[in-house]
Amino acid sequence: MNRRIRNIIIKEWKTTFGNINSGLFITLLPLIITAQAFVFIYLLMNFAGADMLIKTILGKGMENWINTFPEIAELSLVDRFQVFFFAQFPFYLLLIPVMIAVSFASFSIIEEKQERTLEPLLATPVKTWELLLGKSLAGAIPSLLITWFCAGLFLAGIALMGSAHLLKFVFNAQWFISLFLLVPLFSLLAFMLGVIASSRVNDPKTAQNIALIVIFPILAILGLQVMGFAVFTLTILFVFSVAMIIAIFLVLRIAIRLFQRESIVVMWR
Amino acid sequence: MSVMIEAFNLTKKFDNLTAVEDLCIQVNKGEILGFLGPNGAGKTTTIRMLAGIIAPTKGYAVIKGIRTDEEVEKLHEIIGLLTEIPGFYGRLSARENLLYFARFYDIDANTQVDKYLQKIGLWERRNDKVGTFSKGMKQWLALARCLIHEPEVLFLDEPTSGLDPESAKVVRALIMKLREEGRTIFLSTHNLEEAELLCDRIAVFRTRLVAIDTPQNLKKRLFQRQVIVELEKADQKLISAVKSLDFVLDVKKDGNQLTVELSDFDKNRPELVRCIVERGGNITSVFEKRHSLEEIYLTLVKEEQEIKA
Image (cartoon, rainbow over all chains, first blue to last red; front, side):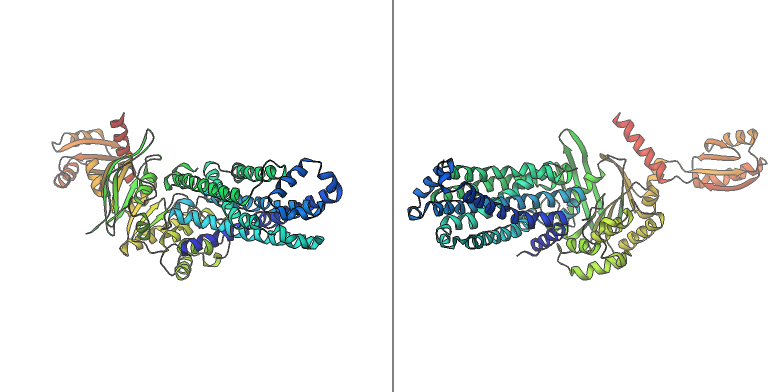
């Protein structure tokens, strides 16, 4: 890796993890999101029950989803619901990299603004793309690692819940695409939106609020599938990933334009 | 003598506002050029263009043969910029801050950082967070940051701002030393005394270049040389006698002190003294009136304002 990019990443980690609030946010939030998923599934399965759930909109969602995975149809109703819920987790997990990336982007860029460090930084031989990439990797690397760690934790949790026999149904191609394609893409998109938002405002919270619009597509994926309006098959996920890549390039162009040295130095007050 | 900084019709417009207009300037190697101008004159914008931070709307600048709008990264290897506000990461220590900036250059970052931390007297505080530093300490640290890669050309925007008089004196000595080392310095300052003390040439700037020359030549250009004669008693009879001399252009009285403007300063001065003595005047001292840089600056800026009006 380019030594300047490495330098930026190390400095970003020092300033971010040196701040107790950011450090706690980045480490605790993923664990809370993961635990929340378990609690949600546990409550639904134990208090509502499969017989009750089948009569709700979730039942319709599950049946639609099962149609594309005929091997699951052989399972009991309880197991079918569990597999259905477990399979949604990778989409739900997308919230982690998004929130971490947005947090990193807004803190790191607004810190440059508030500390007035951008001008001396831009007087060094660092290139704009190195600065952007360094900052995005500084946010993306921990968020990806934490997300994958939480995915592992979730799978371990399934086994601990006594549903290890369902892992072979949960652990499918959609899981891999979601974890290893959608997670990095959403993370990058969220970071870029964080950069754009941070270049327009002076307060990290406002920047985060703006950039968090990227959560809506995630909620849409989850909602549409859970309620039976759509089933995200492999093909759809691939198409979605391609659309994400295009969106990232578009957003990246805007981010780079807003990251022009002149805009940063002259317009950022 | 080689030219290190050159600007050709350098112009910067922000929408309808012209911040810098047709600036043409040359700074030679090892020279300190003082860049003087009122607030909002476009000094910082000029420095930003010369340092390749922002692009000119028209014209261009060349630093040691490098176009500032074309080879920015190469340019930044050879220049050091002291920004108006010494921005640092408050949560990082002084050493961590300097190391971060030093690692963008092809230098032995650890050695250079330690060397400059000792040089600026912050070695004992090297592990303290910059957020706890005073404005003066941050200014020292900013100076170290702009010198850490040993640049040949320095752009210093108000280098003694925020420093106590003693520290300011040390910074001025450091600037003189940097010139002795052969570095070229573009110094923007409000401190006219500092400019006169340090600069080989002064550029008075107000959106456009108003004047550029050595402090001595600027004085000569703007002010007629005047002689000040201090007398035991300056009576009206004596003043009238001085005024009647054909080489005397003007006489002003201030207590027992006469300020006399002569048609030929060097030739007429002894004649003036002789004439006063012959007419019974008791002279206590005779000297040439010195004009401060402040007077030059204010006169030039006023003239420029009048032209614009």
